[in-house]
Length: 210
Image (cartoon, rainbow, N blue to C red):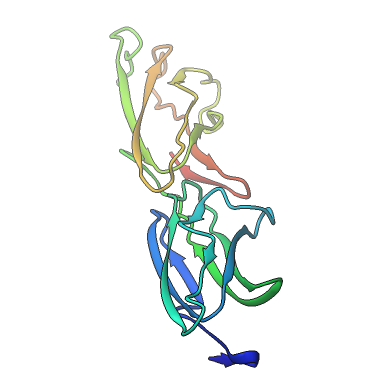
């Protein structure tokens, strides 16, 4: 592109896109004039904390147009939300072009090692407990236990811990919970307890039935 006043300028891409794992991206600027490059986070309007340029200026040869490569380093996106920013290229105080920078978020995943646990009637006496493994890329918590389907049989199940933290949505981890019976079942009838394994983020609450 040749602009007024014999200003020659081009950029190799209008957009830099990254997956949630981040990494390095490169673009090339061609110009015959000095330029400045400024990175901005769309969310804050200020300097981005999650991506950076290796240099913020383009120094021309003073004669013919030359090419210079710029590197954008993008951090891992540990949240579920996508994020965006921009790189503004200016000649003097005049904006020449804007390169958009976008990074995808992550989809929450929560799976449990089983969706049903059966105890013998004397599980309390025998000290029987069961391990429940929750694999997720988000924090999870155990919801209130629902005993309503078995009349008169309440508060006999203990689940520890009540929650488990997780700070990096790009990778899942296994979180162990222990289900313990607090009293033997004195009845001939089966008793049932239900609870949810839940996760939360900034906007949503979703749950997995257990």
